Length: 504
Ligand code: NAI
Ligand code: MG
Image (cartoon, rainbow, N blue to C red; front, side, top):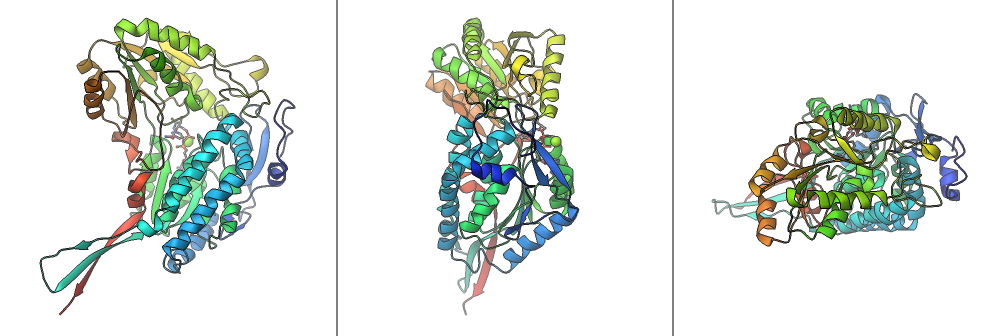
């Protein structure tokens, strides 16, 4: 810990204090090692702007060392050829148990780094990360090939599903532990060796987790964590010829750089990117539920979700009623420091940079005549040192504004009326994104026909935001490619080998 935290915070656990008492180093080949340059960067508490910790700033040289360690573990087959699938399962299961055992520590680290309420990291981020590993722990013995009835009788042909190799996993800051786990759980289950590059805003939980992999029985080099800046540590992995695949979650802008940077060795790339997800409320919906659901569709995690329901379309006859309900619901939301003893519902946005970006959209919308039914400003008073933004509902906006088209990734929703089904399908699909879409209706025909008509990787009907390890998740269009979770993620982290044997 560099600066002392406000006295109104929940006391830090001794393990957290000890972990942050000295610079936190990259984890490579089974141990924490200082970067060659010995440089560090700092992470901040977004609720107070105070400095939390120093973290080793990995760069190209360090990426080399990490790739060598992962490469050695993979090429010697420590994790897949020499270890049985059942033993790999046990290691992954034990890691899940250790996440639960150390859940209070991981929850504090994510809350400090990201700013979200401790209650949320404790009950959502951490347990969902463990669940993810429990689910994928079941996979290693079930990753099967097939026998193919080829035309020649004297030929036996079968397939094997094998790990891709060394994979670089570049993760974002909105759910620090959980987004990293979405990637490394299936990658490890499939037998890959991983290098996790956590977001520079929120590297602490992944770095703490690293020590748990040792206790879980992972051979050295199987699980590595390379903290640092995207343009340094991230780009070094993307360009490295010893890396076979990159799994990325983040912005479309960086995704393009990753695709370009990966051409040297034509490494595999999978991308989970942003969205501008349409949330459609029909007049025949259960409006009480639609009001609460649509409020949390956008404000859950402070709008810092790739699936945030940020374009809200409401059938004209109930527009005023739904907006009035959402305004009331939004005013009940308590915003405050994520580690405050008086736990809030929402914390700050993650960084000064995000604050600037989100407020830029808010000011532009207001200048263009948008009406803030509620919110529309940065929060001051006791919250002035942190990056707090009032949950904001805009009306009097149109589909063509930047605020209605671009991903804001903050607590801002654009609400617009619509008149009929054909119209709303066209407007909902008129976006470069396609991560998620949702609708609220009691008409089962409308529900199913829109589920087909909407061009997005996830459709929520009378609900929003549900995900589970067993169900595939990912984007259409510029929301990315590849699917995380479910058996689809096993496909994402494996190659298929076809074996021919002549039998005469
Ligand atoms: P970002 O896309 O820059 O960061 C995501 C990850 O990529 C981080 O680990 C970062 O270090 C890494 N990265 C950055 N530049 C890189 C490069 N050149 N090569 C390799 N890795 C690199 O996202 P940022 O700047 O934090 O946020 C900007 C916007 O991106 C947000 O406002 C939001 O719209 C979107 N975003 C979307 C996320 C999602 O879940 N879909 C998550 C985070 C951001
Ligand atoms: Mg960036």
